[in-house]
Length: 296
Length: 246
Ligand SMILES: Nc1ncnc2c1ncn2[C@@H]1O[C@H](COP(=O)(O)OP(=O)(O)OP(=O)(O)O)[C@@H](O)[C@H]1O
Ligand SMILES: [Mg+2]
Image (cartoon, protein in one colour):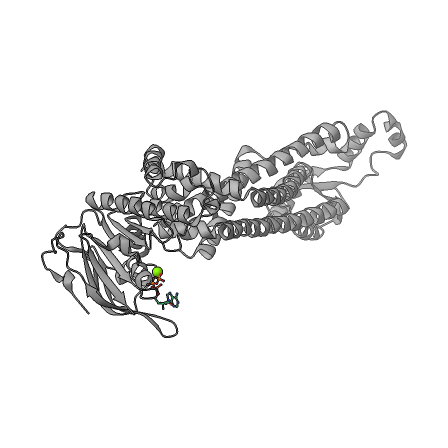
């Protein structure tokens, strides 16, 4: 029975030889879909990662009317953490704020001398937990913080967070849409090429049935075909994505804004999962259309 | 499953079988026939008598409307598809309309019957070369079968039926397109296979094929058996029911 595998591959070879036009078209369509999907997916993951990095700097600043006396601090901390656990809370006094600004301004710090240390309001800096990414949650938290006694106003770079939130939302939708496109294109092309194979080989399939070919003898080569389609097209799609990635990295990174993004490729596990899913999709598509068109 | 079937029982047992094609063409009517294991049987009858229909029933290409067909003791009506596939692998059929693949080479057309058994390529090559030699087709080995003459195509169909030396061979009008010398050659091949243990049923109206030999003939006449010759040379099976007449 060791010959079985040999025959399956021989028959697969014959199938491919007889319908290479269709096979190439399928390969092209599926690898393009994979490229489109993985492209948006890669952009998405990189944006999310960049968001994480910015998120480290996300803080809600509660400007106060008056300094918080040290005895009050635990009470205020408790009030804040009662609402939501936080990374840390920093109390900034008037002096502290003045000192920080002085450091930031460096040599031009002279201008502050006239103003005196009292002109900046004291504040509480609240660093939310990392999982507090969602824009609405941050807004709610900020609304809550305005109810703290003595709070004047809460700031967290609303505009930026908001835009970033919408952007990732949009990307998420695009990733889902292109994922759906990938699934549909693959299912359609694989089933189309199997149907063509079946039509082209109708006479041969009839003879195979007449000489008593087992169902597995007829089906396995078509499954191998689907497997190869999945392997090759995901390989090609991901390969092209990697080339695009390399090009972008060498041409767009460097000093400046994009350097912040510091784009990275999928880790090997993700690459493996994408290839695995593509193979599964193509083989599964084959299986379904074999059942549909062969009626064995 | 056919090979190991005891030799003293009928390999093919047809009991009161009726086959009606829609709407109301009665191809076979209430016929019974036993074919012993190792027998070579001629199925004769005029055109339209039902010879092809009977062979198609035996290889499960058609189903009877009434009656039972047993091959090696198995009721064909009750066989699962894997079992039908297995039965077909053990039955070599040379169809009247050949059923060959016109775009494939002669070699591949014959090999297909052996490949479904996962036979090693070397064995396939040896057997095919042998058959091509007997059937005088060696020089056509790598030519697409569609380019061959009718007589050559017929021999390809015969070669495919004989390729695995199957325990049961059904040949439908195997010499219809052959000259007398070639017919003799084909008959020689069948006899040799029969000596090797194959049970063979040949449907034909070629008198030269069945006249003056020791094999049993059954004559179909409008879907019924007219006459059956007894065979001096062949021992009837133990239960002797192969002599059944309509
Ligand atoms: N698929 C079919 N549909 C309808 N009628 C059919 C079909 N196949 C055969 N018949 C009819 O059944 C009868 C028997 O046909 P069959 O092919 O078995 O005859 P035969 O003995 O093989 O004839 P021949 O010697 O010409 O090959 C004929 O009347 C034929 O027209
Ligand atoms: Mg006929």
